[in-house]
Length: 296
Length: 193
Image (cartoon, rainbow over all chains, first blue to last red; front, side, top):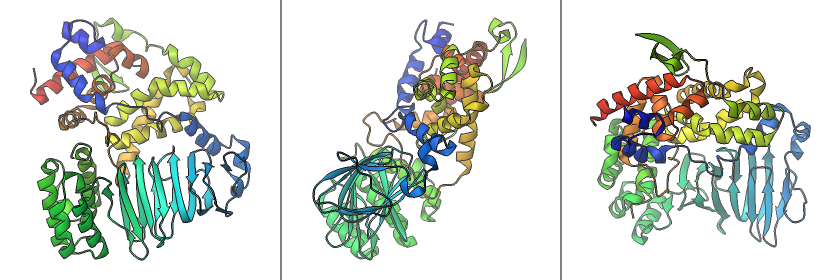
């Protein structure tokens, strides 16, 4: 009965197996993060929905405020902002945006369901505390969709876009392709070709060189060196090769992933991955994520 | 001798000899005041409710959804609770009420098919759950609903039996039975002593 008492309220004689399970499962428990722990944000969103706040009744063009910190000036929807020095912008009530010198941007939409910014030149760093997909930045070649994170987004001199994620993860989207960039990874989007394959910042030079050649000319010939140079951590990049590939190449990529991270064979249905099933591919990405932190 | 008690966590068999099984649903003294104040627009009070019930909500969600979805749905559940707080008739039943919201929310989320993928919330954390932990979680999820929710609250969220009873409004006897039988079943399926 003493073990029953331990199960009930941790009194009595500890049950070694129960203690082991508690320790094993604890990392799966609720863990308040800054993003999760700010119910005030929920309250703001709810208050807007309920029409509680006065500004919720104002025209969409003026709600909610994007303020230039330090000056208190407001940036209105549609108004272009060009910077000659670094400045900080309060993104409504969801975060803060640092804008580098010589940047050009404007707010396209701001509201309860979406804040959309257009960046045509320069660089921004965003720290956003909000539900996924609430904050979106358009660049000339892609859209960065915040999934709860901090990141730096740059418009490159050639018109391309570079995204480096420092926490959480971001989806970089363009017609025909969407890539997912987790913390510690980078993706570039080039004019005319959309988002390139994401990779971790500490990827080996030979892998990056091979990946660059693949992105420039995707196909079996350029994929071979990518597969050969990949490590377990590079399965982030390999996963992105699965979706757009022809069946034969998809099979090669899948087989290489199995060599690098054989554990996924236990949990991910091979046939559905090879068929390009989105749910199976999503499961595979989620499973691969387990092996990135300690793979190198 | 047993009688069937259709509780919030499903139908369980409760020994009639247990005094707690016949007692009234325990009141949640911690919840009553913050609920009233939150309803009046007090954000700090709602913060207190969030701090008090987040583990409970997460545990209920985790018994039905992936970890990534469960994490995200926690805030959705509290958003719904905030919006519908006026419909809660008994402030002392806040825990049981938000559990019902969490269950409905989990069922809705499970039905929706996403077109984009989710990464696990522990990505990059040094204390990421092990493969064995995920396997054990899968086994718990396959248990009957009454057992899986209670076991997840106890083993994953770290709540004690009395805390689970207070938070959910279940009788301590029901929780104790769920824990005991759920653990017995879990041991059998894991093949552990």
